[in-house]
Structure formats: structure tokens, C-alpha cells
Length: 366
Ligand SMILES: Cc1cc2nc3c(=O)[nH]c(=O)nc-3n(C[C@H](O)[C@H](O)[C@H](O)COP(=O)(O)OP(=O)(O)OC[C@H]3O[C@@H](n4cnc5c(N)ncnc54)[C@H](O)[C@@H]3O)c2cc1C
Picture 1: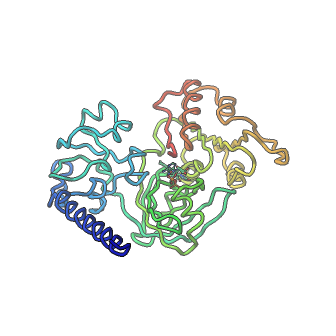
Picture 2: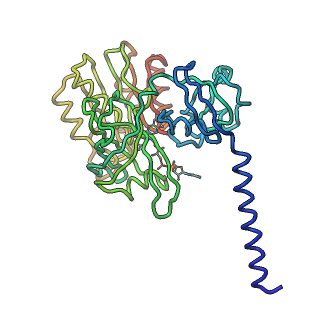
């Protein structure tokens, strides 16, 4: 057999195999039309089976929170199923408590629609919209943080609570064909409903942050969904302790402005932890608020100031600085935002002072 004949036979066999795979996929993954019965018949959707529950709902504009875009790494896309769809998968287990498993709670990104399903979804998720937006302004804040301002083009209005987040979709770029969806907290104030601002820190080799930092420009369009999340101001305490690091400043900025704008009778202290002065941003903005409002105090702290930082502010881990200023738990709530490590350490400090778990709210940027 000549080399030409060998190449031809290998190509023919490969093509035949590919055709077989496509045919098998069409036969075995064809579950026909399936009915999704949501909240005891309040909403009934007819969908083509074969897709994940998360995607089938999104195709019908019901957007379940999902910070990782369906990879089972964030655990946010929980829904309660009344239909038995088989045992909980190993990918779901880390995110579900025993009680949730008993109640039929599952990760919608891991459930394939293969039959009619009855499920429950919190009513507020029906208000989540998908927005087409245009980047109006990009402002570098530090060496690895940028602020983005998006004008909402369709729909034109987003109602949200200070502290909530949106999910934005990246697009393929040179060297990255994968398109992902990631969560970013809104840093602008809810009274401005026609635009949202986000603060995005570049994660080395991160798909979405590399897209946003290196591959978008002012005027580009971006798709986002929202608002999502349970991290927002609660009734109760009059003294609020905000603690953030890095881009965790975003929801705190929104909450502080919201409280000041609404003239709520709250005493606020904002602890912001950074390593050196080059990691600080919005310093003048918060110092200015401190001058103008008696009920707002801003305490930035550097854990390892550089010699030429000429830093005369607080030095040390943010946990130590918080412990120095916050002495009693009376009438206080803590709102924490940033990396899981920072949040866990701050929860320990606040509970050590005497705040209960019910007094502490947080968003971990996983
Ligand atoms: C509720 C919420 C709110 C948030 N708000 C903000 C915010 O306001 N601002 C902000 O900056 N961030 C925020 N985040 C974090 C944000 O959603 C993203 O997780 C973050 O920006 C990283 O996304 P990415 O796509 O760039 O990184 P990813 O591509 O997800 O990568 C993250 C890391 O994992 C590594 N990695 C990726 N793939 C692999 C692999 N296959 N093997 C090994 N390592 C890998 C990457 O190198 C990188 O270090 C928030 C998160 C949550 C859950």
C-alpha cells in the first residue's frame, strides 16, 4: 500500500468514526421535548431535552446565579427538584449540605434535562434580566485593578440593592477560544439605574479578567445578567463595620454611598487592607467622604509598606487593625468582601470580639 493510500484510508476511517459519533449523539442525546414545571405550575416551559437545566432555564430567560459559568466550581446554581433525577453527583457533593440533599436541592449546571421536571426557584430570580451594555469608560485604579463603567442599552434600567453582583460574559480572544461567565460586584450606587460600574482585578492567566484588562476598549459591547446575591444591607444594627481587600472594595463603595445618599442613621467604619501603597485606590474619595460625613470613618492599612511609601497610616494585617479599633459587639454588623482567606480570618476576629454569625455578612470572591 502506498503512503497516499494509507493516508486516504486513515482519513476515511476518521471521517466515518466522526459521522458515527454525530449520529450516536443525535440518537442517544435526543430526549425530545420536556416540560419544566416551576413553582407548582406557576410557570411551565417546554424545552428540548439534552441540555443542562441551567442552560435550559437561561434559554427561557430565567437566570439562575452561576459565577463559574456551569463548571460546578462555585456552587451557586442551586435549585430544588421534586422529580427524582438520580443520585447526587460527586461534582455536586462539596456544595450541598445533608439537609439540602434530603430536600432535593441540586446544582442546575450538573443536571441534564432528560425528562419532565418539577422544580422550585426563588421568585426573585424571575426578575433577573440579561443586559446588552456598552463600555463607556475604563479607568486604571492600580497596577492590577481597573474600573469599568457600562451604559445599559437593552434593557435600559437595572434595579439592584447595594452589594449585589452581575455576571458578565467574556468573548473569545487571541489564545483563548473559551467563553466564560464571571461574577462582579456592582460598585456604583443603586440610585443610578441606567449604568453600572465594576471594579475588576486582573488574575494572572484568568480567562475573563485577561479579556477585560487586555482585550476590551471603550465603546465595546458586553452582555451581563443580574442583579444577583444576598450580600446587601440588613435591618438592625446602627454601627456597621466594612472590611475589604483588593477588588472587594466594590460592593462596599456602593453600600457606603447608598447609606449616605439615603441619610440612614448608621455609623460606618471602612477598613481596607492592602500590602503596599501601590495596592491602594480611591483613597482621596474615601478621605473626602470622611471629611464631609461625621458618620463615616475610613481606615486603610498596609501589611508590608515599601520603604519609599512614606506611610504614616495603620500597619499590619487587616485582622489586627480591626481588633485594635473594634472593642465591643454592641449594636454592630460586619460586612466583609474579598478573598475567602481574608474573609475567614476576619470572621474569626469579629466573632472573637463577640459578634454572632447572624451579625456578619460576606461575599467571598471565589
Ligand atoms: C459573588 C462574587 C462577586 C465577585 N466580585 C468580584 C469583583 O467585584 N471584582 C473582581 O475582580 N472579582 C470578583 N469576583 C471574582 C470573579 O468572579 C472571578 O472569579 C475572577 O475575576 C477570576 O476570573 P477569571 O475568569 O479571570 O479567572 P479564571 O479563568 O476563573 O481563573 C482563576 C484562576 O484559576 C487558574 N486556572 C484557571 N483554569 C485553570 C486550570 N484549568 N487549571 C489550573 N488553574 C486554572 C487561573 O490561572 C487563575 O489563577 C467575584 C466572585 C464572586 C463569587
